[in-house]
Length: 317
Image (cartoon, rainbow, N blue to C red; front, side, top):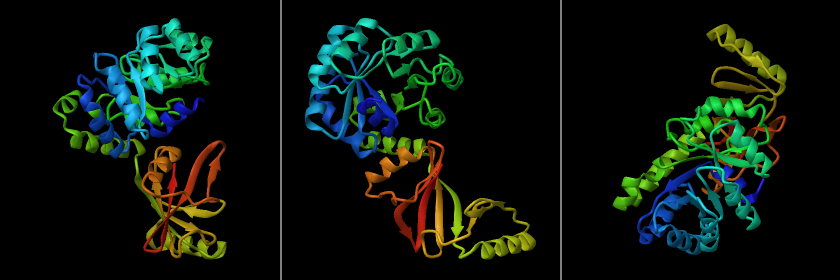
């Protein structure tokens, strides 16, 4: 996948923004970055779009800047010249797609069903915008397309907000979702950058779905863990399932050997470990190399270089 699309996948959310005043571009961009969503799709729905893209691309290298509502070949060239790193279109126009490909810039044209996906594949695209997502069938459409078009990736946009974004992002064929709620038009017009930053932060947390999964207690051997499981079962009626390395109960894990953390660990559940690791890296928290556990090609868990009162912390998906 194109590196820009990979970065969009890592971020997970794409704010769709109409700017009517180029002077708003930099404070808006800074609010997005500070809120943990360093990407902006500036739509060509106003005359300020070109200059806004130029200012953001020039002055905020940490922000991934794209152009949205790209309707013509001319707009493709204008956006690329201004510094856009990706393009988004409401529909699939072969001439627009061909021009973007010739210029080496990824484009996400809008499709609403199998016909559009099929045409996108024939044009050599690896990702498209499902638009309008909810009206086009939403999650049911995403799931239906996953079978015949397993190689296609989607960025659903339209009718999506903080309440349903996480459900979309749990799908393997969804690399990100787009929407206006993170930088709502009213907030942009009012110049309420603090509110936009806060909304981005809340949206990022909602996307990641951080939640307590379990507390892990270190055992030194299988016999010790087994004895503990039997005791907890006989005294409190707790039930455990035995795995290769531990016994797992409701909210508690008993390990058969010493895991990271002196007394044990805290398990934190997330929707997508890759996205969560990127978000945590921006906050100075790194993964503990060598602790990855995989389920096929899916990263199932990993420890962090983080301890709380001696307890290690790991992410589980």
